[in-house]
Every structure is written in structure tokens, then in C-alpha cells.
Length: 298
Ligand code: SF4
Image (cartoon, rainbow, N blue to C red; front, top):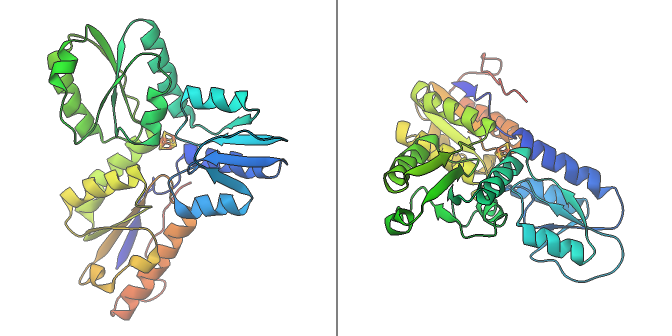
């Protein structure tokens, strides 16, 4: 069986950067804390916790050198301000592409626009975007209803998008918003790595008999890859690690496509590939050196 790995599989540059910053900070002395998970992947979080960085739910008073690491998804302005007041030194690992959304949202608010965010209301990134603003923003989720009444009262609005949203769903929501708000500015803030992943996931499920999507169940971007894949190929499976693979997945399959969410470490992807090779060999599949490819680019 041929294994085709998406070029865009795994860590995006924002996650790589956040992990690098966390590991560098770990050696800098003092107590280091992060508010929630640095990225949505259990292996990465435990690696970072293993370096002595402690996960906390909220900042508190204390003494001595204390560092607060801001995760890739970003944080609310008030939370950062409060941490500074409490004496924390801030190390900001917010992805530059999320920072860009923050900047757009703040600048448009200053110009008098109501900010509409297309994204999951309870996702950390969306909370972080909302938390940049003084005025009330409107969040419209990909599965949620369009708040027609609230939108019709807005005179001018700007739309920003959670960086990992599905482009097609965003376009549909945007069309609905346009019907209600005449003076509208749209900023497509879906990030480049997400766009690349979504492009590949449009064709891979069609070209392969089976699709394996690797990533944490807490990872929103992995969920979206799985959802897109499932609509194109019923034999799409979302796994967190090799232990969830079942031989049945590959029955009579000639090819398997593999992709992984933005916070899935390359090691996990490699382990999955090796395990698939073992499983398909047991089933009478091709032997070692069969020309299977691993084309993951970093
Ligand atoms: S998915 Fe996009 S916005 Fe999120 S960390 Fe990666 S590059 Fe940044």
C-alpha cells in the first residue's frame, strides 16, 4: 500500500516558534507559568511541562522572578496587563499571524467599526481577539446561527476570521453578514499554513483510498481537516497516535493519505507511518522498501 503524506502535515511555523520560545525560556531561571496549553497537543504540553513550565488557570500574587508565557493562540489584553501588575515578566509566544488579527481588530475598532469575528466562541484564539477590544464584538461560529437582528443594527463593521477556519464556511457566513451590514470591511485572516493544509485536504481524500488525520481531539484545526476529509472520503479517520490505528482501516486499500494538524509533532506522524507499514505488511501488504513515500516538508 502506498502512503502519501501531505507536504503541509504537522507543525506550522507559529507552533514551532511557540515551542522554541517555551524551551528557550525554560532554561532562563525563575518560575515559569503558562495560562492553559501552549498549543493544543498533549505530547507537546507534557514535553514543555517536563522542562519545568507550570500550567496555571489564572495568575496570582507571588514573589521572586516569575515569567508568564503567552501561548501561540494569544491572550486577552486585560490578562496580560494584570499579570504585569502582579509582577510577572511576559514572554510572548503569540503567533505573529494571530498578532496581526489583534492589530486589525484594534485599529478597526478605533475607526468606529464593530468587530465581527468568524470563529469558535470558546476557542482561546477567539477569546484573545475579543479581549483586545474595548467595545462589544460579535462572534459567529461556523455551525452557529447568524444573529440577524443584532447585525441589522450595526452601521459599519469589519470581519476578521479565526486563523484556522474553513474557507468555504467563512465565505457562506460572510455572504449572510453582507445581507445585513451594508458598510462592511472583510479581512481574510485565515493563516497561510491553514490555507495550505486546506488546499491539500481538498484533493488527498479523493486521490487516496483511506485518509488518516493525526492530531489532538482538542485541536480545532485538526477537527476541520477531518471534517473536510470526511465529506470527500468516508474512509477518513482522526487519530491522536499510532495506538488508535486499526488494521481494518486499510482493508483492500491501495493508498493511504496522511495529514496532521498544526500542533502535531513530526515524531507522532512518523510513528503513525511506521505503524501503518507494519499493519499493512501483516495483512499481506507490500514489504519494506516498497517505494512508499514520506514527503513531509518542514
Ligand atoms: S495555525 Fe496559523 S495562526 Fe495558528 S499558530 Fe499556526 S501559523 Fe499561527
